[in-house]
Length: 438
View 1 (tube, rainbow, N blue to C red):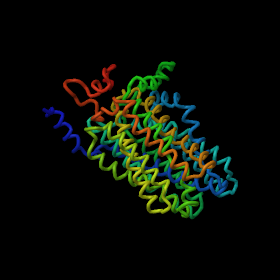
View 2: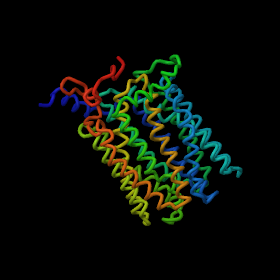
View 3: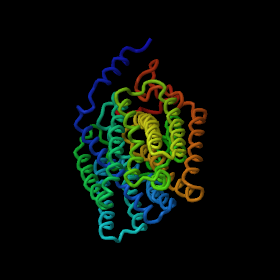
View 4: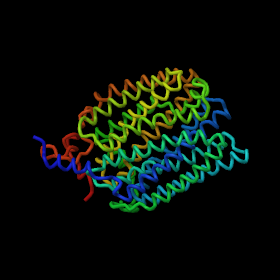
């Protein structure tokens, strides 16, 4: 017989309005503006680089140069997120992103912008994003009650996907007025994002400036390594994203296969976010309480199949529909993964664990762009997509065997009691200290 207290609590949590928390609203605004700016800048950079070089490999280098700061800085990034004021870190990163966009704007207007300079600026902005991305994900657990955290994560993802819908389309339209119009809009958006996040009030701030030791630096890796659910979820996304990404090749598909301009590329880049937005809106109201692990595995398999359909398509409408399904399935995986990580990690080390997560996912997304660009230069864009995405499907189908603990996860919220024990205890086999600091 189900626990009536748990059921009543879950029902009550489902009725609480997330927008009744002012800090959460500011957090959403910051995420939306930042994501919109990143998407607009990505459209402009991708189109500029492809126009300058006519090379898929050069598009791959954009991803590579964004990946380098993530790998080199993972250990430092996590330490900074856990031992310094997280709002200050994010605000500083937004100012840095604005400076990078300003350099691209001035270079485009003055005519001295070269592909090598773009690569340099992309590396710089990649460094700022490497610090911002894992840190921004530590904010929701610091301002929202645990009972509605999975809803807050889904709503945050939904808000970000709204920006990812608008951003590329807006970037494609603004590009008609020159790339500098796109970059200056990005400058304004990044600065506004920094202001909004600085106004957030953290209810559970972390301790600041602890002593740096090898143990504290590597604690994020060790924490993930000893928890099969988290390791399985992160490694699943790592391989799926590495084999399944198509972002770097969108300029090639837009210009050479589908015969559409930068506006069409903007629509293609927005399409995954449209699907993700629809699914995230549902998950923000109906948190996953059953079969969360199997749902994640199935979503990654659909992600690979939808990407295969995109690779085979020569029709813009079919391509948009396939990418929308890519985004919808990826959104399910992202919400489950972030919920698993954020509800199973103590707040005072969440930054280090999210840095590991970012390296596994966002960093892999960037190196995947390089892999796609390099392979496309050798065998063509469509064969590259077909080969990699078939591998992504195979990974999804086999991961349940490698990580049965992940497949067995029911609820993303471990604090719900099952037979007098936390879900985390029954899933992981043992509880190693409190899941949350008191």
